[in-house]
Amino acid sequence: MRILFCKIASMKYYKGVQEGIDEPHNGGSYVAENGRGMEERNFLSVFDRFEKETYCRGFVETKSTVKDRKNELHIENIRGCELLKKEDTVEDVLVVWCATQKQEDTGKNKAVIVGWYQHAAVYRYGESYMLWDGNYQDYYMQAKEEDCVLLPEEVRSLKKWEAPVAQKWGYGFGQALVWYARNENAEPYLKKLVKQIQEYDGENWIDVGYPGPSSEQIKKISENIRKVQKLIWKQKNS
Image: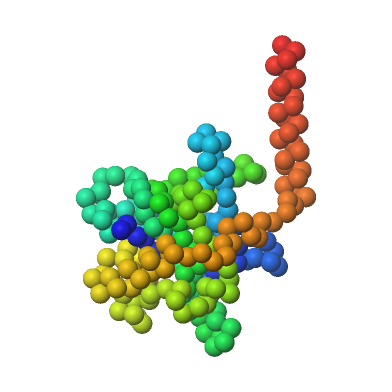
């Protein structure tokens, strides 16, 4: 199976920053300095009006291996994709989203699985889509909403959803935020996890935590509606 592990900042809902409710943390220096990161909307359902489908679109920080070259996610390193060195997209990947979460019982940080995309498309150089305010959101993975699961926050701390870290497990995340899961000694873990994901029938927070529109959002939406109305009026009276 094609499987890819990505580590992102820790949040409850991943549907945008909501001050005092859902703010990213344990996401590295950029998140610490800016109070947000591109991964903040990784479980926000987005309707694509061209494809007539609803997707989740996810971001993970990638690095360029060559100076001045665009950041790249090396899809040929995903297990089963070794021959795709020239391809810009790979389909049918299980993307497992992980984050560093503080444990209530010990107060220590632990890498945990927060959710996943099944049957995802993964892009080498990333894509982008337009947000309500006209800005663009970058993403490297896309999957249909029905193939996406966001675990409830309290479930993520369970031992069975602990994410592998190389220093402790002998395989898993090192310093990079992407683990391609090609270690031979990880096979038993991967087999067990895939079965666990496929059989999961618990609560899914994909529809939980959507923020209400802010006054600024309402203002922007109203402006856009007026623009459309003016355009329709001009077309009717031209």
